[in-house]
Length: 336
Image (tube, rainbow, N blue to C red; front, side, top):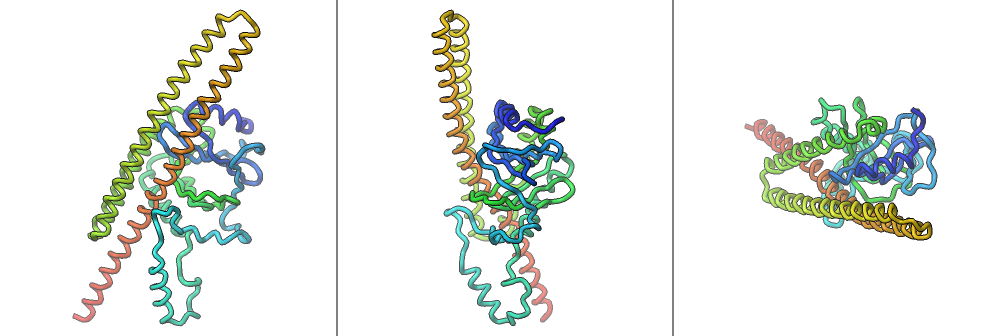
């Protein structure tokens, strides 16, 4: 198989409800694609093997990837734990309390700045956790947070820096090989749809269990708010799916009409007019579809922020609170 023709691949994927949203380069050749499967409202990370990679020009949303360990002169890539949307805000008092407490100690013996853990370690832990349900499957999952991508390629997790990336996103993506996608696209879509439903339920159950076992009124309120967030996203996906289905049905009817008109027309001038009308009609339907898809992609990004942050925070807080409780029990036993 020769190198991939990206334009043909894009056209082929769009016929299968898969929209390419970003192109990623390694050594100036297209190595990965982020795509959105709008039939299930989920992201894919399409990996292109080295022998199939090609140079790319004239496309929007093209970004260069670097192995994170090779990034030395870029902006401070480690600061990616800032919450991404206005509805979620980081509480400054936590940092202030930590800072005030740290001042009681000799600052000169601290080895890593103020002791805050680097983000790449946290995102790797999250990717490892999220991939546990995939242990018996050929599929794996990766997470992107702004300029950082943590991709689980079966044996190991690779960290990449996305150069010049300015989008404020956080999402999870199913990783697939482009060759497999070309050869078994319909089957893979069905499998990913089935997997995504189960994965989503597993992680939501974990979040719910972690927050419930913490036994705090605050966390109970968070669970209820998250349930509303899930329900709202479900409504948006249902509305989007209904719109796309209706639009595609209308487009098929119009295509059938124009084919009939074209077949029965004998005038060359009229045929040219019909061809122009036909192309305008197709463009109009495509614009309506793209406008709606772009809005749905944004909604999916926002929901993934809630989903991934809640998974990470509920896990970390559960572990820390349990550890704190155990440590107080040790202190109590120490003086009994």
